[in-house]
Structures are given as C-alpha cells and as structure tokens.
Amino acid sequence: MKHFTFSILVLGFCSLLISACTNQYAVNTNLDKENFSQYFSPAAVTIYQNEQEFTAKYKSLGGVEGESCQRKAHHELPNEIDARTHARSAAYQLGANAIIFSGCTLIEDNQANKQCIRTRVCYGRAFFIDKTNNTKQ
Image (cartoon, rainbow, N blue to C red; front, side):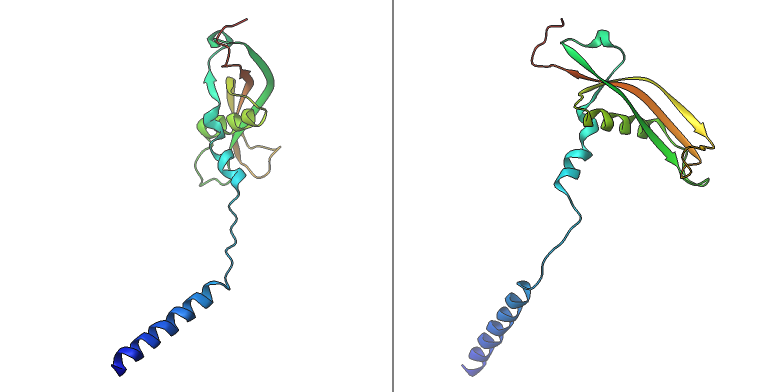
C-alpha cells in the first residue's frame, strides 16, 4: 500500500510540475493570416488570350508586370512561370480576376536591378469580369 501511495504522489507531483511549466511559455510566430490569402491569390486570376474570350461585362484595371530573378550565375535561369505568377499576384492586388499577357522578355545584365544578373519580365493587362452577369455588353 505504501508503494501505491508513493506512486500516486510522484505522479501527482509530475503532473503539477508539467502543468506549471506550460503556463509560462508563449508561442510567437511569423505567420500572418494575410500571407495565407496572398499565397493563393494568383489562382484567383484566370489567364485569357484576348478580350473576345470574356463572356460577361468587364472592366480594365490597368497594366501589371511580374518578374523572375537570377541572383547568381550558378542559380537557375529566371523563368516565365514565376514571372507570370507574380504578374497574376499584382493583378489580384488591383482587384482583378482575369489577365491577358502581352509578352515576356529576358533582360540580360540587368543594370536597373543590381540584385539580378538576368531577369525575366512578363507584362499583362488586369481585368475584372463581372461573373454575376453572364451577358456581355
């Protein structure tokens, strides 16, 4: 019986010690709720080839661009996929749900951006398509 009572006392003491320690720690993180909504923002912007593909009323929101950077010679080349994704994010920031790309270009020995030795830049026009009204006017 003494052994059983001693075991319960040790177990109770350990539980008390563990619970006392957990109240003294605060968890801080660099996660931001806004980053999660921003992370998927390019997926909310559909790529179209031209305005004739729009099936509803739409509004032009302006030009956007995105870039992909090669920082060092041994890094991978800047690519069009990343540049277009950044342009779609920029379009989303304007409130767009559609984009039409006009072109992409590779800038070698980029004098304007000293951080990149090569930059792929893609240009497009951002649009908001009113999908609640499926008639084009």
